[in-house]
Image (cartoon, rainbow, N blue to C red):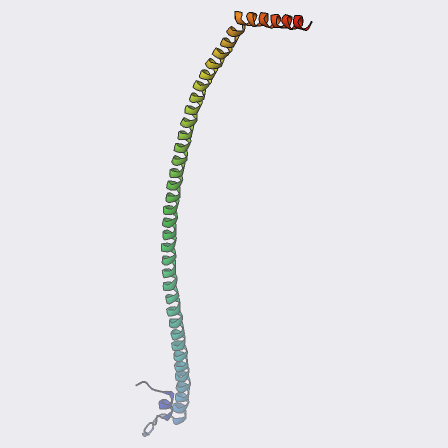
Length: 167
């Protein structure tokens, strides 16, 4: 067990013939006691300071570990978000392509249907034109025939007979 300042202060030496000067020894011991007390105080202060610094070091080490874990979790989360966004973007693109294909196919089908309707209308128009032309030609033929002349003569004869009967 180490000496304490009190041990040094209470130390008694045996007296011998012509021993050391007692006052000089006491002064020296007093100086040793002061220095030793100062060393003990400094040691305690340094020990307390080391403890404080070790606590701070532990705190900062824990903080560093926590930050490292947080950074790791944040990186993993960012990667997961990125993967999810990429996956969602691919699904959106795929859906858009499907919709585009569907719209194009519907448009092509409508276009074909309209083209067929146009062809049908052209055919019907030709048939109608041909029939109308035949009707007009028949009517013209009928108008240019002798029957109209006979009819006109019959009307004139009827008018003359009416006039004669009248008068």
